[in-house]
Image (cartoon, rainbow, N blue to C red; front, side, top):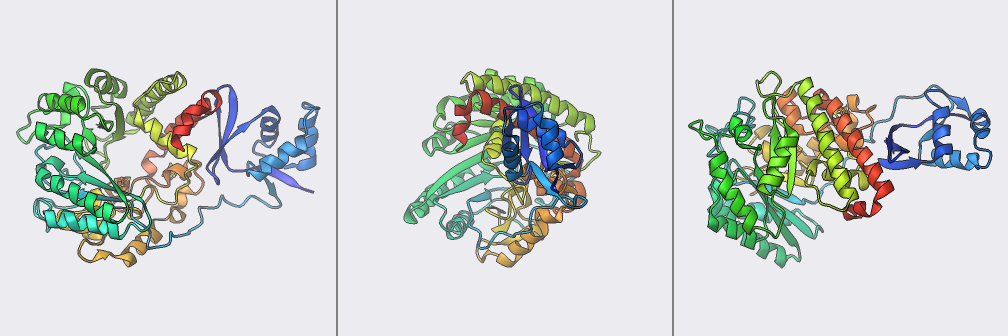
Length: 477
Ligand code: SF4
Ligand code: SF4
């Protein structure tokens, strides 16, 4: 006799319909009424197939319930059980074949900064690399920048499009080198039949008219690190003398937005215990200043710092993210743009059925290059000997990369194996984990509630769009 139980999924409701987020396949499945009744009939129980069909059948006399049940089994929303349920299986520990082609090199063109933001992961008490007294030079040389580009090209395999990201410190403090390496990267890409795209992150306080012209002429995507209106921006984002940066940055950002229109210019906000009013920050940055996209991230910090978000802070953040996500949905249903990029990024992952064994591309398709040419997992680890994956002179250390990938696979994060959000989270940012727990190998269990709450909100937005404006989702294909 066939005995059935529920599969592994996260249920949610959108547009008056019930959906399942199917964890093993990371697919979204819409339930009609008979399918929903079959799922409900199994709620936490094991039921003989025959009994389930008999129980539910009386309510849907005109439906071929056996076929509906077969479909639910095919998508693993329902499973056959013969014995007590085994623990949910983790993602299989399949390590990607290396050499895994690179898509992105993040060049830390300097580790110096003209600001002194109290919460900065590069300079605060939580820093990994000693940028003041360590072995890395303060600025990347043009030669190292060129070699970084060569490394990216050489290691990018068949990838037709590669990405060069400029990061710091304050990136524009090494404008001479970055402005010279852009044409070099274009030449190298063209010679190999590839396309190269650029992006740059800056605090915008050093932007000049010449730089804006260069960024615009070269189609370089720009992200400005900015925390909101004057009072919020000046709370942490200060110069070395303690003076706020808002009034220095504002005219420069306005000029950037006016002249650089070939690519959307985005803002990236760091949320802290004292700067957490997401909705008013969003309004200021989009409506008053004119950013097209705004993304928010909680500050990366060890617990106990005065700016760290605590449990209430994360709850508050989810509430405000939800309010903005509702606005995003309203705009998307009406065919209007909304710039809350945290939603669009997650919607894209849901739509593509992302199911990750690693939380991000760090150490896989993405590497960070330190000012002296050491290659690391990503920009946040650049210059850390512990997280080194080679050098621009010697190339990628494939042995070190393999060891990293083996140690960091989701299969090793046993706490995540029963979590329905693992296809999208996969344990979260390595740098956050390193800051919090002293090792990049641990999952970020301090923010699971926030991750699951936020993923649920995005699934609901996705379900509403799938039901009411599926055309909107095609942009993610
Ligand atoms: S870190 Fe938490 S939310 Fe993320 S996959 Fe693991 S258990 Fe789930
Ligand atoms: S480790 Fe963290 S900071 Fe680095 S690329 Fe991944 S998510 Fe971003």
